[in-house]
Length: 460
Image 1 (tube, helix red, strand yellow):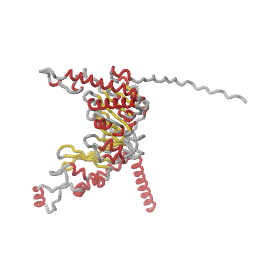
Image 2 (cartoon, rainbow, N blue to C red):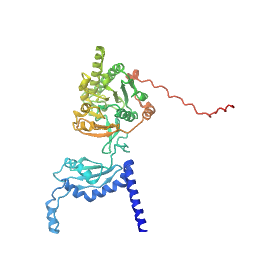
Image 3 (cartoon, rainbow, N blue to C red):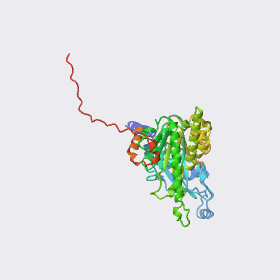
Image 4 (cartoon, rainbow, N blue to C red):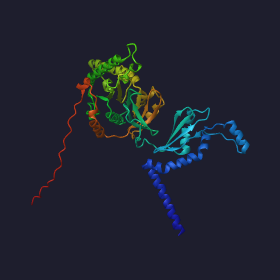
């Protein structure tokens, strides 16, 4: 009887271990909530002091404390770790604040992130500076980029020109903020996820009072599904050569409007003095414009002298929009597979104006250097190591030098197109762009299904 009980207990234990292993592989979020979270918390609480000591993050205690310990007990005076705050569990990991000791800095904790990850059995540890003397440890329990689930709250609700477009590797939302980063360059090879990135951007902007303009030299196959929400669309270089001067003229008109409102006369109140459209009264402020340029290399490629002149004119206009468009509320989203000096005159100058950089999987190291080499050289290796079986995975950075891995959530082309159709009435009216508004065919009418009549069998 005892042997039967032992075999049953052993079978139950093996089944529990097998179930936990399957849950960890197939449903990592559920595994973390049920198994990983309590185990990691127990490890953290049980080994906090020893782990901090092993990582060199402890300091000698204050002299008064050492004297008190020697006077009241015979214990050895040991170094003191940073003071730990409350452990806050999340659906993807843990959050905990540390108060650093005098002489410590956030870089000391960040340098030990890999050691902390192994000591506490989590997927990754990230350090964020909160305020002087306080840092936040964000422990991620599993690979959140394997199956992207955007956070329920991203902090962008109701914010104009702010779109949560991807998930960062620390389980926070990657927000595309056009007010902070006016222009962006998105690079990536075929099937790397650029189109999915654009879909999320357009779907997020479609519900805002923003003018959306597209230049898609692949005959419009990428942006035509969103025609209902676009105020203008050019599907070849010839149309782009006609559209870009109109945008430049719109930019100049907006500068004239700003200049007319500036405090030139003495005694003008300070609140009426402005250098961009955001300082204008709301009833006079023009709607912001976001220009999407897909496959930008097609605008640079030429075969004849006439096409070369057209190319130089278009590149000049793009550079003007990139240099001067921010104050006029005109923002650029430039996409392509490669973007470097080999494209021709003006390519490097245009790239220098694109503050934000996103590099998906690329075909060679030179392409990654084009996107990230001049702002975050250490991110080039991360962009080159993106596997082909993870479309949407990318490295995002900006001219501040910071970068992180992100992945765009999946959204079908039909769902993005439906969002644009439902929000078509939100498109602001810009009379200068009316000649370039794409044609939107009427939705097909679906006939109601009637009773199905089956033919009678023919007698032999």
